[in-house]
Length: 124
Image (cartoon, rainbow, N blue to C red; front, side):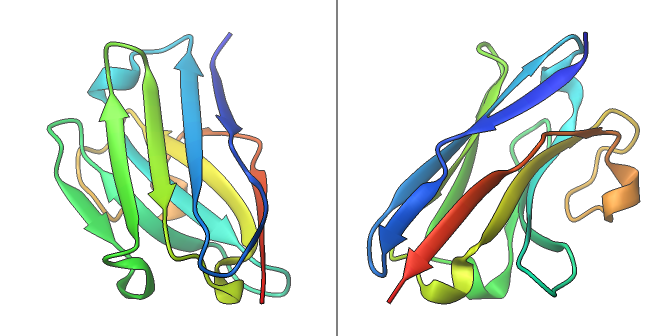
């Protein structure tokens, strides 16, 4: 079965770190454009970071310098290292992958695989 499964969310204090992981199965994860999205209550889904199959990365301005996206295609995994977390980073984080489009910064409907989401809560 085709699956994306996130892990690593949790509750932390401002300034602390979390590392999210996304594990894929059932499709060629290496040959996809990938991304992390997040959605806070009452807000739209927001592209946090993306990475192409050849490793080009892109970040939301508010997370630049704090978050790092990476992929390990041999292990079918993707990660998001989140440092210096802020309360405004609180959201459900989703990993996504697109087997249809090679670019970074795709819109949500361009990603055809999604995980179930993992909650990140940052308190001040």
